[in-house]
Amino acid sequence: MTKKINKQDENLDIANSSEFVVIQEAALQIEHAHDPSFAIYNILSICSRLMGLNRGRVLLKEDDSDYLYTAYGYGLMPEEVQRSRFAPREGITGKVMHSGQPAVIPDIDIENDYLFRTVDRQTLPQEPVSFLAIPILRKNKRIGVLTFNRLKNRQRSFDRDLKFLKLIATFISEILAVHQLIENQTRNLKQENEQLRHVALGQGSQYGIIGESGSLIQALDKAARAAATPVTVMLKGESGTGKEKFSRMVHRASNRKDGPFIAINCAAIPKDLLEAELFGYEKGSFTGANQQKKGKFELAHKGTLFLDEIADLDLALQSKLLRILEENAVTRIGGVQDIKLDVRIIVASHKDLHLAVNEGLFRLDLFYRLNVFPIELPPLRERYGDIRILARHFLDQANQSYHTNATLARDALDFFEHYDWPGNIRQLENVIKRCVLMADEDRTISTHTVKQILEDESAITHNAPPTMQTTHALPASEPAMFNRVSAEPVPEIEDKRNYWKVSADEKENIRAALKYCRGNKTRAAKMLNMTPRQLNYRIEKLGL
Image (cartoon, rainbow, N blue to C red):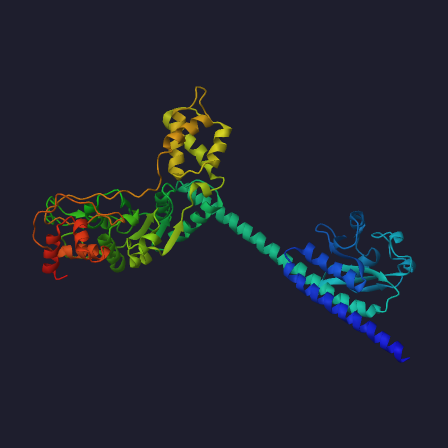
């Protein structure tokens, strides 16, 4: 008698151990709810292997009817899955779905409601087989049925299996619920992204920005967000990526659209004239200043000022720009009065400003003031799908301009898509125009023509920094901007400045030059187009 009890206890311990492992594994499957086929298959599989609950299936309602179908199963042939479909109240499965109550059929051979629809009796063991069906509930609502076959003559009771399977049904319900939540969120995100895409595309095309690639949409979305605020914007990207078009978009999409949009390329104007262009000057402030002139900052009042190639500003002008940004005021050259400004600043550069800061070529404090809302403009080679769109657009424009009807051969378009385009959109537009002019007699632009044009351009090194230019002697009263600082040695300058009176306006330039040259007066003098004696004299007179 004692031995028999011990044997029962041993079997119970084994059952408890198996149940724990299955429950633990089922709980772990919830993290795979994004793939319910994988998660539920694992649960049904381990129930079969460790618990002897075979041919597990999860039946759910069809979307367009009340019929139940086998959505997930284990140990079933494809044809068995197809047969496993039940009308409301049909068979044991249909009745469990209708009533919401679990069912235990101890012997399927003597149960009239058991239909043998899914599994043929001949494929089952010849000993008595049982059937268990559990409703799958979600917030007290019936969403499906979990069913298993098992051998009738097992040590484990049916009641114990029912309690265990109710817990398994709960895990499956959670997996289905989480999956539905993920699906809904994904669907909503897709809808939102599609809406944003249409908005961004509409805004982009409205301002001449063409394309529909993901990287372009991201840039357009950022530009639209920036337009809604007065924040300073920094446009980053290679030459030819459309920085001025984006700056105009930000302006025209903002509440400043009725104000002026002023653009200036800091690399295109000689350094000695740039200060006057930016800040303006008073009449008589230097030789040739016959009348007062407003600078770009004043002209952009109540509007937007776009400073392209901001990295080419020398240190002295960087300092003055920082002051304007901090005080919202500008002082003309030769003037003493601050002029209050209300200007939205957008800057752009194809150079790496982080590197310029690290090399001492760009002020860190100014960088922080400008880099409030950076927007990275993608190079053309990363705008997947946009090259064809842009090529056809530029082709239409060129045909209209040159009164032709040229077409692009298919292999030419393919070649465009696989080319690196170091000059980006600007280069593509230029190549298309040349292609139109060089098209064959039948007005077809062949790959050979495209390659010939690109081969002509192959000697060009794109994005090369401009070489430093020296300045000539200036009148004593004219603002003296020293050359753009460079890692290259400063060349010898033969025509040093003639003597002129020391001016307090020179302090800033001299300090900046000495700082960049790390106190080397000879090098600083060369940079300022002075002799060392002239520089030393000014340092002494200005008390530097």
